[in-house]
Every structure is written in structure tokens, then in C-alpha cells.
Length: 478
Image (cartoon, rainbow, N blue to C red; front, side, top):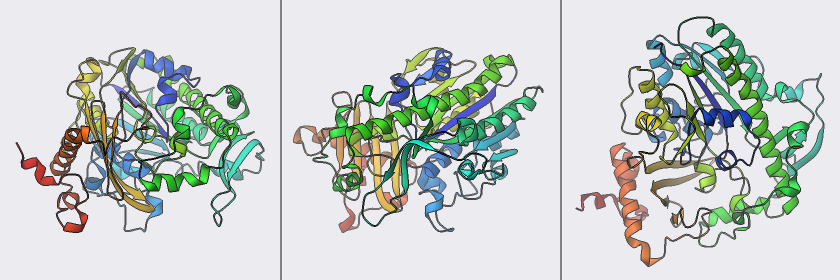
């Protein structure tokens, strides 16, 4: 068999729940799920764009690849990717693949994707048109039929767009610009026998939540039900969560529903544009020999716990991400409960393509799950780390089965039973009945810290920063 092609479809800030629960109209993603495997418990290793994307490319956790924050929020000598770290696209090129990258990069600060294995540079900056340049296009005057701006707190920019319905068609926005560029690449690549990898990355549905009139008309805000945790008073949660929620506490239920409708509309537009790429491969007759990956860098709170965006909180709405994979030797039409990290995609792609591997302790291939999606006993644990963005914080998130533990270096910790409390309304951290669970989960955290040489955190024996429930020497216990 020929080496499989790869079509990688990447979003920004896409929550998992609207995809898996059919809240959105996504016929093309539904088709992709019907010919592939969907992962209900996939997660991001970091809650913001650049660290998560760098982890996807290298298979490393952020403390090892060096990108700890979003690159544009730091000085030039900070959050720089370590150039000695290999990327999976480089391995594909070494295996005879033709590669192209289109749209949003945001892995590191140069946009020079060629140095990381992407032979065709179709990033927004190299296309000569930013993903937001359509706003300035004099041939297309933008008019919002519905619009909401942030107007809290006093002293901040009151013209910061939150959500809106625009007259500009998606083809003229970022999602369409990236898709068109990728289609040009596919037109050429599909004409040759050499294997190819086409990576398409967009800003959508990242805030501000913008969609067109047609997509918005599919979602009547009055029919949208707001989940219970939209009204969470955040008792027994870190105080910074409550502080962050102040900007949205003035929103009415109608405005909350409009924001959700715009977000859903954006997802439907993504589905339509990415459907063009899926259909292109399908019509070429190469769908059965093409690995298709659909995912995102991290999620979106979308009103959960009174919060939007990401950055503040370790909520499932931020960390639980959609992941669908189809292709040769991948089970069709099933949903797996394996807990898969975004960074695990790196070694998995290399194994699927029989390319030279990148062997690091931070991630592992899940090829065995793709062919046996119900054999998940070895895929119940997960680990993520967060360093803040502009507001520097320290968090570590640990999953084990239905348990979730959050170490908050800045406040008290969190413990949730996701089977009993999927909306994360009841923090069990201070319940003495769960001390053994807290100890087990903390020990699991230190094990990952040690295995991946997160030496700064591992050496926290200095008295005033002994902030975890148990210290790293708990690993010495039998």
C-alpha cells in the first residue's frame, strides 16, 4: 500500500461538547466521524494557543519545548521554542512526504514554518493577507446586524468586540482564506504519486464569536438552553475564578444565548469550509488512503461557571477538546473513551506513516487505540500544565479515570469526580473522605513531573513554596 496522505484540520478555541452532543449542524464532521474514530476524552496539555500548538508539533510538554505563554504577549527572548527539538513534519519530509501548512501558525514567533518541515508556507502572513485583513477591505464594508462589545471593567477598551453577526461571507474571512490556499495545494499534490501532508489551521471559533447571517439563522437564541454551571457562584473555587467572572456578571440570559448562537454559527461555517477539503480528497479517490485529523488547540468556556475564553480556570470546557481521526487501519464510526493528549498526536502520526519516531517521555502513540478503540485500560490518565498568559499562574491538571485533580500554585486546589459531577460544581478537595484520592492524584502529578524532568517544580522543597498537598518525596513511598 502507498504511504498514507495526511489532511490535518485545526481550529482555535473549540469546545468538545457542541461537537459530540450534536448541538451544532456539522454534516461534514458527522461524515468524518462515521468513517473514523472520535475521542470523547481528548484533552489539551495547555490552555492557550502557542504552548498547546508547540506541544502538538514536538510531542513535548511546554516546560520542555520552552513556549510557556502565547508568543505575542511576551518579550522577544521569552516563550521561544527550543530549536533543537524535532517536529513531526521534519520526520515526514525525511520519509518522502510533500508538506504544506496553511493559515494560523502561532507555534513560535517567526512564521518561518519551512525550518520546521513545512515545505509550502501558506501561513496568513506569507499569503500576504492576515486572517483579519478582510475587515479593512474597502470592497467589503462590514455591517453587524447583531453585535456586543465588552464594557467592563472601567478603564479598559469598551470597543473590544465580544460577539456579532456579520454580512461578510466566510469565504472572505480567515476560515475561507486558509481553506482556499489549502485547496490550491491539494489540486497540485493530488496529481502526483508522492504522499502529502496538508495542515490547515484557522482562528475560528476563537472569540470574538463572529458568524454570518446564514449560519446564525440556524440557531435561534431563544431555543438555546443554558447549562446549570452558567449560574455557578464559584463557592469553594479559587478566588481568581470569581475575580475573572466580574466582566460578564452583567450579561443577561438573552446575551448569553446570543453569544452561544454566534459560536455555534461559527462552528457550522468551519464545517462547511473544511467540508470542501474533505470532499476534494474524497472526489480524488484517495479518501481511503488519507489520514484525516480534526481537532483544536484548546477549548472555550462559553459561559460555563460565569466565564468565557480560557486562561482562568482548569475547567473541562477548556481542557476537553474534540478529536476525530479517520484513515487506513482506523476503526470506523466509533467513539472511544481513551484519554488522549493533543501532544500524543505527534508520535501517533509518525507511527501511522512509518516515519522515524520522536522518542520523548512526555507523549506516547495511541495507534493501538485507533484499531481497537474499546481497549482503553492503558489510556485513562492525562496530564496538563499551565503557566498563565500575561497573568502568570502555575497549574497542573491530572486525570485518572473519572477523577480530576488540579494543583493551583496560587490558591487552594481542586478535586472533581467527573462521573458524578461532569459540570464541576462540587470541589471535593477539603472533604476528608477523599484524602486518599488527593494523595494518589498528587503522587501521579509528581511522577509525571519527575519523568519529564520538570526540575523547577520538582525541586520545590523551599519552605514557603511547599504548596502541594504532598511533596515530591511521596514517590519514595511504597
